[in-house]
Image 1: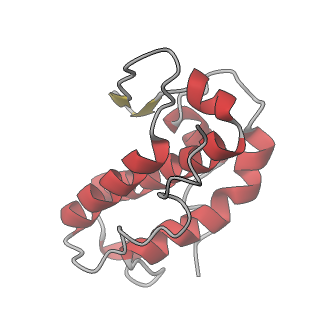
Image 2: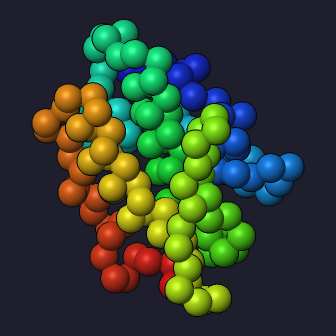
Length: 143
C-alpha cells in the first residue's frame, strides 16, 4: 500500500519546474498515486520499510516520482518536453542538454538514471531499473 500523502501536487509541480502553469495539474493529480506505486515497486519500497529512510532519502524518492511523472507527461504532450526541461528540488536542479531546437528533454532516460542513483543511495540492490516495458524502445519515444 502506498501512503496517500507521500507526495502531493505542489511537490510534483515544483519539481517539474512548472511555475504558474496549471495545464497539467489535472493529469498530475490523477496519476500521482499510481506513479508513486510504480516507483515504490521498482525500488522495492513498502509502507513498512518507508520509515527507515532519512528525510534526504525520502526527498530523492519524491524526486524520482516527479521525474517519472515528467516521463509520462512528455509522452502525453510533446509540448511539455519542449517547454519544461529542468527538474528541481529545493535549491538543486538538473537541466537537460539540447543539441538543437528539435531535441526534446529525455525525462524517461533521466528517470532510469535517477532510479539507479536513488537505489544506490538507499542501498537497494534489487531495484528494477532496467525493466520499463514500452517506455524505452524506439517506438514509444515522443519524437
